Image 1 (cartoon, helix red, strand yellow):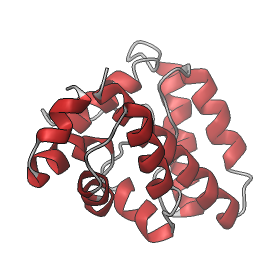
Image 2 (spheres, rainbow, N blue to C red):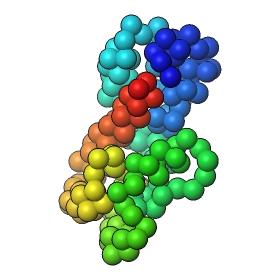
Image 3 (spheres, rainbow, N blue to C red):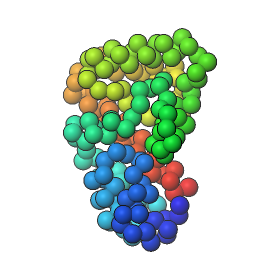
Length: 164
């Protein structure tokens, strides 16, 4: 989609066009309502400003749409397709890595009560596992901030890719 096309959409169509970026309808609504944008950079800056206001409740809502690292979602939704693509570094053929991720995911969920979130695109499976293990040492406040940072990165990456 081009920026001009996005600027021309109805509010509902614009919200729908960016809904795959993050499972937070308020963010999509606010971003769509601020149209027209003069440039993709302006759009991304506004999106980042909105995302920088997210807190724990937003993280909890957004995590409902994110699979565990190493467990690719099934389904035909755009979000599922993006997650499968983003996690392509975790090969189904690499069973020791998948088992290590499964174990670390369980530890993380027991410790923090939520799914581990990381921007997977551009990271190897081993790098994601190392980051998961490192973040297990965080206190809950540190981890919430790191997870919110990762959510912002994922969201902005998906948004940027929507306009290429």
